[in-house]
Image (cartoon, rainbow, N blue to C red):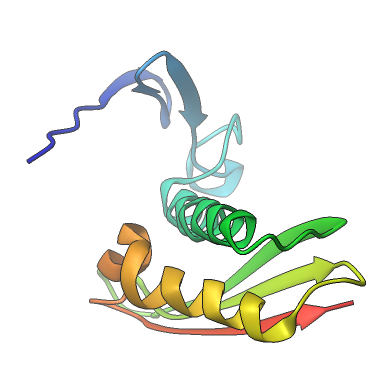
Length: 138
């Protein structure tokens, strides 16, 4: 079983620097709550992680299926509860492809496999939020 460790250092105000392996990211609160807006707040980074995780799955699966595309974008929209602890309870993922030679059934299969079998971030977030998704091929 793999163990992962990250380090998060407080810098000042409401700002923290997170370190993952050799990479760093600054997180900060918005001005209206005492931050300086030096980076994203933590919760949206969960959505970035979700998009990255499922995106990597889909890219890998489509490559194995010999599917080529001109562009691929993932847009994640989430609805947050009003009461504390405020959390995302609805998440919608839009998979947007451009490519004239894509087989829509293979794209659907790749996305379904990512969501149902491979994406650990989707699995974890799915414990607290309803995740829906759609695919657009342009």
